[in-house]
Length: 117
Image 1 (cartoon, one colour):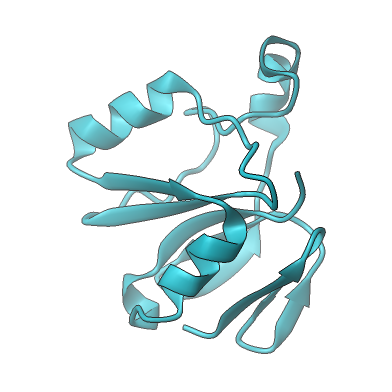
Image 2 (cartoon, rainbow, N blue to C red; image 1 turned 180 degrees about the vertical axis):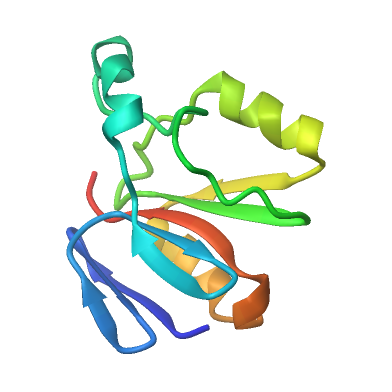
């Protein structure tokens, strides 16, 4: 999959430019809907990835790009759900996540990519 993280606030996937967080499910891209996670913002200092969001749970792996500085919080319940579902949850700064995704078949890519912090 052709994924580039040119820097803070932007991501390019298969030639399409996005200026917001995205969710990739088997190569299909949509905007990350953070609304369900916003109630946890005060607890984490930033809107975390929570189990209340639509997460693309599809074994064997879910890649989470945690932002430019790797500061996207991932709630413990998300890690727990990954274990229950048999999904390896990999959390890396977004630039490193994009690098890893480039070597994957588009149909195998399941990811949540944070474009800021």
